[in-house]
Image (cartoon, rainbow, N blue to C red; front, side):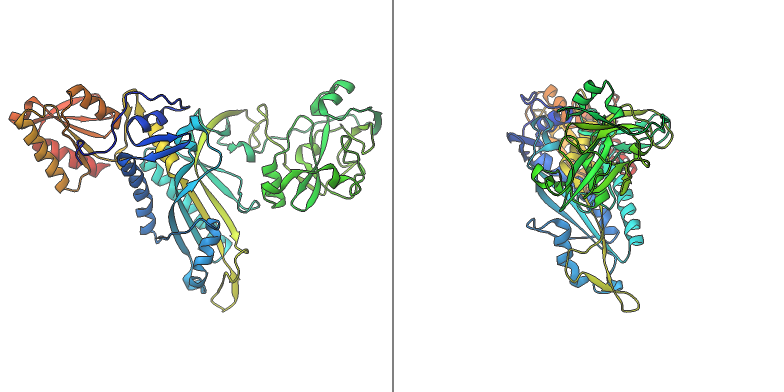
Amino acid sequence: MRMTKLTGKTLKNIEDEFNIESQKLLLRSAMFRNISPGVYSVLPFGIRAINKLLDLLSDQLEREGFQRVYIPSDIEFEKSVSLSLRNDMKSYKDLPKTIYDIFSSGREKIKIKDGLLRSKDFTTFRTCSFYENEELLLQGYENIIDFYKSKFCEMGLDIFSLKSYNEKNPADKADELIFTCGAGDRTIYSCDKCEFRTLEEVADFYVQQYETDDKEIEAVHTPDIKTIKELENFMNIKAENLAKTLLVKAGGEIVAVVIRGNRELNPYKLSSILNVPIRDINMAEYEEIDGNIETVPGFVGPVELEGVRIIVDKEITSVGALVTGANKKDYHLKNVKYGRDFVGDLIAEVSYIMDNDKCPVCGGSLDKEYGIDLGKILSLGKITDVKNLQYKDKEGKSKGIYGASSYIDIYKLLSIIVEKHHDEDGIIWPIKVAPYHVIISILNTKKEEQVKLGENIYRELKSRNIDVILDDRKERAGAKFYDADLLGIPIRIVVARGASENKVEFKLRWKNEKEELDVNEAIEKVLKLLKIY
């Protein structure tokens, strides 16, 4: 490619304000253009960068037996794939079946200052795999995580996976692929003593055991005192010594969830425990409670609560005596103890972690950090929502098929690479994902010997299938150096005054040193570097 022909001019400055530097560089380098809030067009340099990422992912998967398909957007991805392939999976001999797909996706909630990290439209790399049983599913699940980590490492990224919420099948496992970044929107807690690390919405925490006096339960008149804050002031106690009982509609069922007064209900955990989609987890309305459950809104408590299943947060079982609602207007109960005064139908961790909580593994302190999620892996378990999705095993018995899927946001991946690899002058592309490997800068296009040598090097590298771009513009030398640094192409060959002696300047983008080399030496060095990387 010649820069005189390349569509998209670099920019020195942009007016847009972004939370992270990579978004400015993606626009200044003419990879993307912002055409309206949250909406971006992709220019040729950006197309090359995206294709490099997609090729790196798809080439390896195809070597491992994955095949590319096209799946329309009318039905959710996993169901569409299942419907498309069910006639191809009738025997155990047909499994595993593994496919991938590259798809233009969209999101409703955009964040303008996050740029391409939360743009309205983006490219998604998706996989879907089918297996004979749960054991093979889990093996395939771990394999796809390892695949992504390996590929991202080749891209110069340190990515880790963390347990996540599974929005497809809440009771099944899911993992997110995370890049640590102060401007990220994923909250992470990590232990300062052991290797424990967790996302906020699925975070467990150390539950301390408390010893309290074994006093008898006692009713307290609390006229029109309905909120935790009001109760704190009225009884002169802290919220942590209260238990709030929340009536929650989970799908078609109303459940009572008992958590400590200073904590918030975690709907992600509750969704996973009940295997109910999070969109169907809502606080019950008064009309749904009245006449169905023997209690009074504002005074709900777990003692003698009937007509509803009670889910007790694990912490409640160990904190000792608490104040709860009495299921009677204007009354609360104090000295309430789990096991003596009430029990739960289910004990589980259903509250959010708090900043002062301790590590559930070793009891160490938890530090808060932030990250960007660039993808997700989901277990689909046994697929039951697609008719006739079964295979016959070796004995001829019909059995259900298990599945897993994954999603990678390519715009986020590109952004993270640039965020990780840049300096004050511009992008520093890792060789594996660079849109071009080499840039040849002819400093003075009026000098015939410089033009001729630059053209010769350009043709030679192209003949060896090297991605090379020739800066043949009639621009000042300073402008060419500026753009070369901004674009971040890994290897730079400068053709200048030494052209008459077949000498060029050779520089690597990630190093400050320059060296003068004979043309043939420079070409050999390029070939050697590309083999190494």
